[in-house]
Length: 188
Image (cartoon, rainbow, N blue to C red; front, top):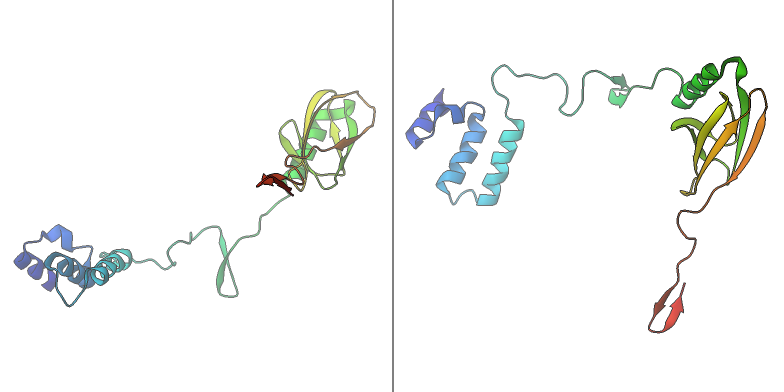
């Protein structure tokens, strides 16, 4: 190829020329020779562009870079993520707890103040309050997180066959107001 001869005349190795092509070689030579026609910033940009878009022999892709060919769906000629298939994780976890409970299980209704708190039982997400979960007898750990990062942790003991109702008040993680003193005056 012609640019390989050009590279040999300039003292560059052949292996350095192969992935770059003409545009990359021109940028490298502009940088190396310090031509006045191409200021260093433009030459660097041209070299980076050539390195980013240069394609060596035999590597042709039909997909744009940055998108995996699997796991995406074409919708209206645009690439979008595929919709998840199957039940949500909270439904799967509630079904798992109900299966573990068997005939000895008990239902527990959980209400949180404030409502719409995310609920975890023994480290597994089971949904948002208010909700009802069937649990096996014994000790379980509840963890709740509110919409404004309020938090509560409770250890509960489940009695077989007895329906229980819990109302859990969440503690604020962050204060509602902060007061500071500026030049001797208190500000809120």
